[in-house]
Image (cartoon, rainbow, N blue to C red; front, side):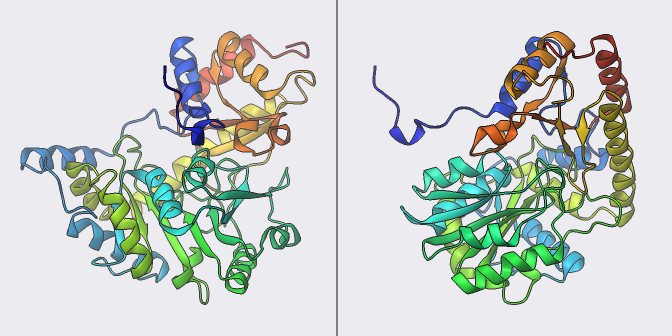
Amino acid sequence: MYPSAKRLDDFRISLIREMTRLAIKHKAINMAQGLPDFPSPPELIQAACQAMEQGHNQYTNTWGIPELRQAISTNLQNLYDLYYDPEEQITVTCGVSEGIVLAMLSLVNPGDEVIVIEPFHDNYLPAINFAQAKPVCVRLEPPFYQLDPERLRAAFSDKTKAIIVNTPHNPTGRVFTKEELNYIANLCREFNVVAVTDEIYDRITFDEHQHIPLATLDGMFEQTITISGMSKSFSITGWRIGYVCAPANLSAAIRTLHDFTTICAPAPFQYAAVTALGLPESFFKTQKEAYTIRRDRIVKILEKYQFIVQPPQGAYYIMSDFSQYSSHADDYKFAKYLVEEVGIAVVPGSSFYSTPELGRNTVRWSFPKKMETFDAVEQRLHRRTVTSDQ
């Protein structure tokens, strides 16, 4: 038997998706993976079906159909006064995950350092590893998960080539402030570092919090690769429609890599994504109200059952400290107990850290769910309250 490549020695399959598999196996409620359990907007289903019926089932232009690239450009300009040329600076990808990998492979060289703010999404470190670069992690301190400027500055050096910034943030729900983003921007300019931003939750924010694209800050357009997609805002996580926006020289490299990996994103869903970006602002207003209700509901449930939580400012995840329940169990044992005995799947918090001990008392909950799902979660927690010896 031949061994696998050494670059994979320190990696395992995504624990998020593994928890989904365990949820299916144990007939548990899946509060682990960020996938809605309610229908996608009917306008988008109709648009996708229409695209297939009209014959849009073959390869498209490698970097995306012109209509979608134009819609992305118009959307960013209308929302943030951020202009990317759809002909040269926008590439449609198979989700944000591909976009992150393309950004790393097109930007960093072996031995370069990439700063990662942790906790982090689980595809960031593999993407850096594929590029043979070195991750340098900067921790957000619970419970408020604010960015410490001194800790951030200490991570920058003459070896730093890029920093990955995710706001609204998965898994903590933080929306970085303009002050925090300016910390990042100032250091990027000082050290000539490119910011790679994951902005997939830009339309899901709560209360007074607003998303600010890093590329809109002074001097950052030429030093930012902006990555986002349709999965979260439109509840179409299986369609795999993302996009990467970058200055022309970086965009050319990204397009070359994309051409030789996935060729193009799914054709009929690209056409339907044009419809998604054309939905009226009332759609997003209603969505924000609905997600605010969901956020408040999950916070209320978790607080009722003695989890320590900080209400998220954006995205649709919440980190919870379970140490009040069980000071002896680590996050893996606790998550195993929840899925096997209580019937609820969550994600162990340590999987979001480079140093697992930092997340040992936490688990992440995903809340893009129907009201009946929250009812069922509460009922299962009520029936089988976690005890201190679990």
